[in-house]
Image (cartoon, rainbow, N blue to C red):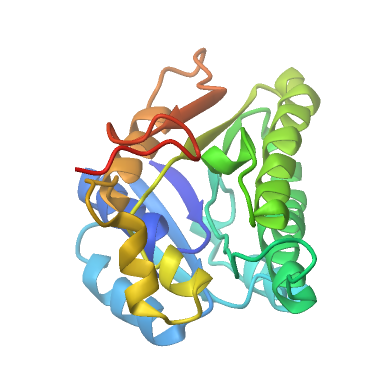
Length: 250
């Protein structure tokens, strides 16, 4: 039974992945998130399906992250699969009008927190000469779009970091890859537009976007490939989307 650590487990893709892997019955789950009430509810829901432990901390709180991982129960201490899912988007303004606070949040969580938790988990994988790291990126990693320079830059960084990680870790038998989703209907747009439900709904109006479970199913497929197979880089789009900016609305 492999131990899987999922960041950003309380909503969207992370939540859907937690449900899907729990249903598989083949994994111990370490579920991380900042909303303790959602974590408790998720742990209660999944406890009958698989071994599960939750870690409540903000990804920007380095000390809390370290404490959470250092105090895991012994049976969860060796992480076999790290799913770097936690991420955020804030605002959609041109570069000369953007918020420095929004930019800090995106770079802190999308890039720096991903690096921090990978730095904590990967030495154990190196020591055991096995493991897998799967980073959840975005179509924005592949092509920038207007008013999204910093978000796109943060995801392009994830793409580059993933490639570098794979080069650094492949000698130790560690598989490293990324999934880059296109339009997925989650809380993503609601957060980006700071709770403006009408503006968030308009993002998906007139088309069928991906669901969080579509990506969760893809995550499961990736991590269940044979040990000699690495899904290094995978872009997943809804049929209605051809690129970051080309969408067919019916």
